[in-house]
Length: 125
Image (cartoon, rainbow, N blue to C red; front, side, top):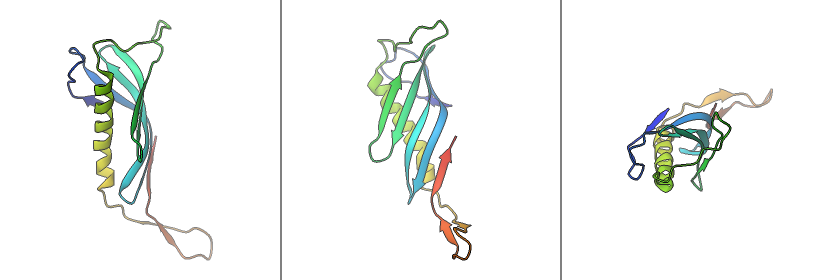
């Protein structure tokens, strides 16, 4: 879970991002992919998709609450600021992978073919 800092324009709501799906690929010190999960704002929750790579994007999707009603983001929440914060937090976490030195792992591709090394790193949940 990622606790988001106190956001201006959210009228005192606490906010968080509970990662549920992670599909990130890091190659040549550059990570790209999708991080998805529950975005909580106060007592309300939404689904959030954070895409990083050539074109970064954040999408907040409404979900049904326990009563079968669709949650709506309160008027007091600055959605653009929330999306910006989500993207910034995910990118800051991925910097650790982009800056990491990965030790190549020997991998045999076919019998009789010289071993090659796998230099990519993949994260999936």
